[in-house]
Structure formats: C-alpha cells, structure tokens
Length: 413
Image 1 (cartoon, rainbow, N blue to C red):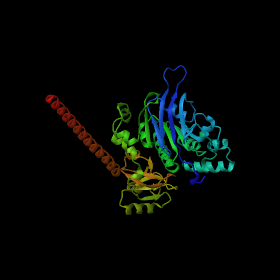
Image 2 (cartoon, rainbow, N blue to C red):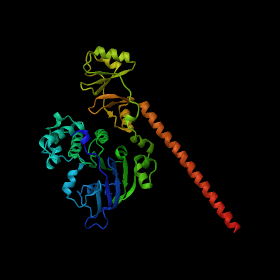
Image 3 (tube, rainbow, N blue to C red):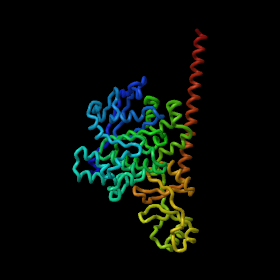
Image 4 (cartoon, rainbow, N blue to C red):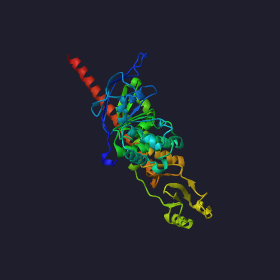
C-alpha cells in the first residue's frame, strides 16, 4: 500500500472498565478510565498480577469486560461483534504466537485473507511488511517459524499484527522472551516503525526501562489496574507521584533518563572504513593516512565486521581472516544513549558503530559524546534539586510568617 493511504492511529477511551471473575470477591480490574490519543504509544507497567494484561485484552475483547465502555475513534465497540473488532486491532504477544504449520507469508497474510483481500494485494502487503520490519522478502517469504531465530519470529509477529493496516496495535510483553541484545534491537525497530506508521500502540511490560524507552506516556498500575500515575516518562522520572511509583523508578533516575535520548539526537561521527574486498596494501595505506590507530572493516553488504589495529595488519601476512577484533554490538539511530553506553562498555573500545535499517554502517558514537550527555543530565538534576530545596525553604518561611501573624492577631485580641 502506498504510504499516503496507510491508516494512522485512533483514539481509545476506557470508561469505568471492570472485570470480575466468578468466585473472586475482588475484581481483577476495577473501574479503569483512560484516554489515549491517536498515534500515541502508551505503556502499561506494574507488578505481576496487577491486571495490566487483562486491561489490554479487554480493548480487543479477548477478555470480555464485566462492565464499562471501550470506544475506538468514538465508536463504542463494547457491543459489536468481537471477531470483527479483532480484525481491526493488531495484536502481538510474547514468543510471537505464529502458527507453526504456516509459512511466514501465510502467517502475515492471515487476517487480510479473512477479510477478503485479493491474492495479489496480500502478496504485495506481505512483501511490504517484511521489508518494513527489516526482513528480506525473498529470503523469509517461504520459511516456517521453526526456521527463524527468536528475534526474527517477533518481527514476523509484529508484521502479522500490522497486516490489515489496523489503527490500533496491542502488544502484550512482545519482547519478553528474547535475549537482551535482540530485545534492544527489536525495541529500536518498533520506535522506527512508529515514526513511519503513527499507529496507536498500547504496550504491556513489567520492565520500567523498556517503558521509559518506548512510551510517549506511561501508566503505572497498582493492583486491580488502579492508575498510580499516568504521565510522560520524563515527568515520572523527575516527579514520581508517590512511594509506589518511586519504587518502579528505582535508583539512578538521571541514568534512566539516558533512555529518553536517542543516538540520532547526539553527534554521530564518521570513522575510516575499508571493505573485505579491498587489497591489504590499500587498507594499510588508508589506516596510515587516517591518523587513527584503527580502522573499521565492513563486510560485503557494508555492515560493521571487524576493528583492525595497526598491529593486526602487520601480523595479517596477506590475509584478514584471523586479523582484528569482531564487532560484537552495534546500535541504530533509534537506540537510546543507555543502549549505546552499554555497547561501548561491553566492547571496552571507547566507541560503538551506528547502523541503518539493513545493518549498514552509518557512523560511530564515542565515549566522550556519551559522557558529556551523562554529565548534562546529572547537572540538570543537581540544579533541579537546588531549585526544589529553595522552593521548600521559601514555603517554610511563608508558613512561619503566617503563623507569626496569627499569633500576633491572637495577642491583640
């Protein structure tokens, strides 16, 4: 589908939404009301068993509400056919939930097929979506889920949820079952997708750092989905509503705010690069001219492959096969500064390569840039603390002054 015909987001209104299960004296979800803007990413975060997944599943009526209303773009969906509703609301879950007997293309094309799209339109949509989530259509079209890594399965799961171009995408801990590095990259991919698609996303997680990274707003939920605070990540980090929310924020709020700044927001510098096809002498000459102690070797697709130092080239003896240090981690422009800092510290090399959609090299972010950002955040926190202390002292002085005037008034009387 051309970009200009794609469906954007829709507003979601939850009004006094409640779920009671037979035999339970207390409701699992109690009287939740919330408004979510079109194109907004809202994260539900809270302790296990607080009702966040139940609340999410009531939006597409996988779980029927006991009482209350759900409106999507102003339309009350509480009384319409739940099967039709689910075809209009994308849904992605942990471990992708793909049908094992279907190919990747069949999994993605399932809902469009059910709603009556033509074979040609489904084929085009599958290709478009595989490309959108960073998987080569030619390579992955005919594969089965068992032939994919966990991260690839999750990408297909997201593609399937987006297949019929729904305005709303519900995600229930979709990245919870993959390793941390894959999880970071999937989060970055979701951020990039949302920049392009502007869907309304409601996302459940128990990981507060994930909530900070992904959310336009975060709903911190107590038991029975009571809303402790519903605000922007920055507001929750700097101004938690109470001790319960502070417990979720945890220690090191300034460092957590590194999750609010993206790699694209800081200086990405260039670095001398060569490719595996370059003659060894050309690589040596380029390293000598660069004035640096190392150079980045790219593979045949232009992706970061190895860091080569001068000594590595001296020992190469005509072959780069055993020379250099493999690039263990990269970040995209959508990654957070926290991701970049972790990658730099993991590689212990003072910089991390930045890559594009296909993993192609686009530049580097170095330790100095990251540390400058950390210092700016810490300084901002220090100034906020001073201002807060000043406000408290002024309030105390005003209270003391008011009390003194009261005593003087009593004495005169």
